[in-house]
Image (tube, rainbow, N blue to C red; front, side, top):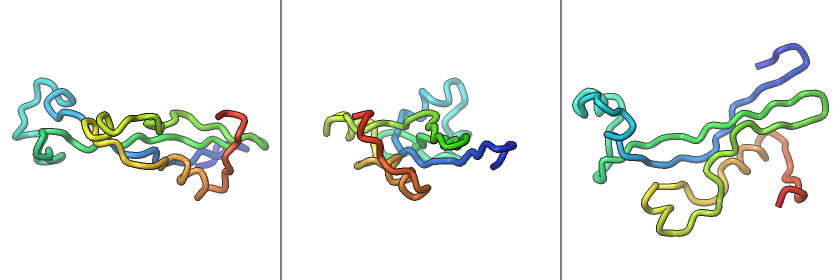
Length: 102
């Protein structure tokens, strides 16, 4: 999408799973499960969506996803996607990693 000289693109920042009951609150499970089925642990799949904003010669990432500093136990609990999906999305959009932020 373009707004004047500014370009905005969607980036996939990874997926994760959270308890469906906690996400939908008082909405009964039979209603929300029609649209978003739960896994065997009652978790629903969610996405960490980010935006790439290109303004002038600058690339700006809005919301940086789940990150990569999760240990194996927390990756299992929250169903965090392995690797760095946000970095892969940035590379698909022609943005190279800036080592200054490490």
